Image (cartoon, helix red, strand yellow):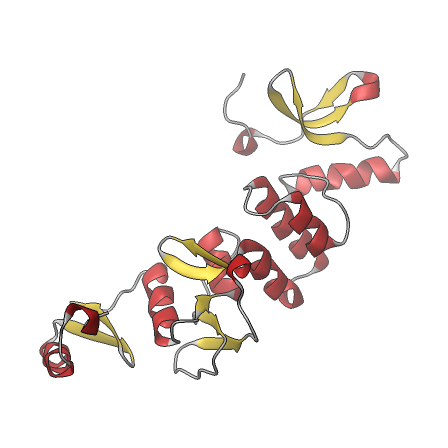
Length: 209
């Protein structure tokens, strides 16, 4: 990027030695001081791993809001990279539909991110992440089916998922979840009984109406 602005390597070295540029990784600098924000740390790791690199795994999931920021940024690239302070992964290919941008950072797509994290998650955690992605409209029904192996039954919380298990356990009809009734989204609808069940509290509802 500096070379694209016509800045010579000698000038870069002088600025780095003088503190105008702070070395983060080999060939990667922050302006003035090292970035300490998780997004800046992640972006620096992506830059350090080359033009095909993407933030991935827990780093990508943290950007999407699904996981906590990892102590070491994670990056996936089609080239073999081993950089200190970065957890790297190699992929044979990263086609366009597996790439995304979020907060200015190139990262794996939501579906690819969830798929990559599957070995680290319990089945319950994995299902919850898929459901979160669907409710946020980051993945569609087809992606849900590919990830879970069955068509989606949307819910937004563990309480709603527990309610579906409750219905199966006690032989109750299976409700429609997140259905729209007269313009309002409801948690569970039993259409044959003209019955709506609202499950979640204030955290999941915008107002008392």
